[in-house]
Length: 462
Image 1 (tube, rainbow, N blue to C red):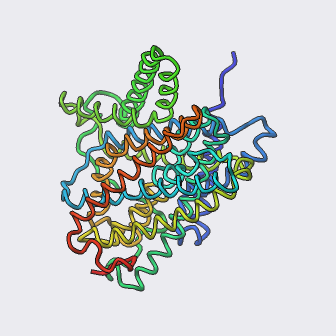
Image 2: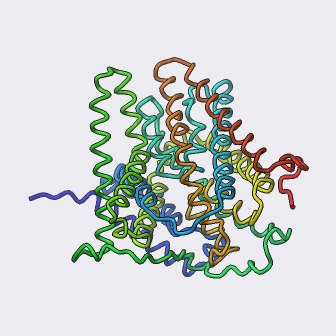
Image 3: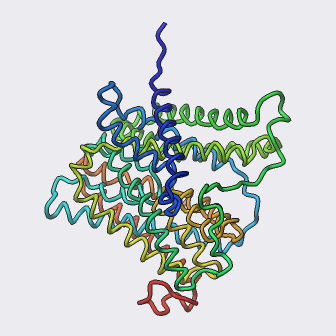
């Protein structure tokens, strides 16, 4: 009897890369100093292996791509099932949500503008959605960048998934190196409290989580991790069945319905998150919400993120990068520059307390991922004593619902390209400008009279 080993082979290779990266970090101070996550190091170890050595053994990056796609949804489900233990200030949380949304709109408008400039000048055949991969790779992460970029390949974007992963990898590097440089400058400029300058625990970069009193053990003889994992995987199966049903129903709408169904599969993680939120409320209504706990959900999410990040970088095709090197380089550099300047300008006027703590966390998350942002925050707030991290988690909940139409609209340029109808490009631009206007109005209301005080300064010291 023949069994399939493909997914276990890829998981085994990624696991060996993660173990090697952990050993390197323990021995080489450079990786500790610049907070390079082990998963990022593992990804760059996998990159040459899958591009040059793996093909000789009959392996390709398709398995890694599948891992990234599925682990993204599992991460979202785990995070959406979590219980947030602390009540937060509504104004602080909303302010952080506005700062996050500002980067969605600014990065997207920048990407579209650069893309259209390239199309009008030296790269007329550049795919019109290309620049949106700045937002997908930087602000949303490798899973989303790969899933949506891969979906665009159906519309004619050659290597869309790989380009998305490339922007995500660039974002990780910017978050780590630029983040540390920014923190060092902040210390010199006294933007950080002096009693928070001791970077405790940087070497291991472990983030502790609150233990929950409720556990699955009360449900019988089942390991709590197995129970929580079963809940996550069960919700993912329901997501798959829901999308299957939705695809069947949309098939009655003809070609337009089929195109929409294809786009919806590319954002499976959104449906997974929404179903997870519904399941969480059902558990609460049935009074069995004690059976799932944050500690095990955090472990599931953390494991998924580590494997996803390593696999996402390893899945990058150097051949595709060679094809798009110029727009990737230009957008990668301008993207992080505009992100840093706009975020620091906005945040220094928007937040009322723990300003730099909130800002560096968002910077790390808007160029890398949330774990990267938390790693940067931990340099100056090793015990997470400030409310920055917990407020961010609340803010993400607000942003999620604001971001659903935003993410849906990312498919409009691709659909316009495939149909030859340019109106979809302008609809997309109008949507992102609407988001930017909303951000500016909210910023003006929250910041009050000091909203545009000394507008020529990037960082306003109150």
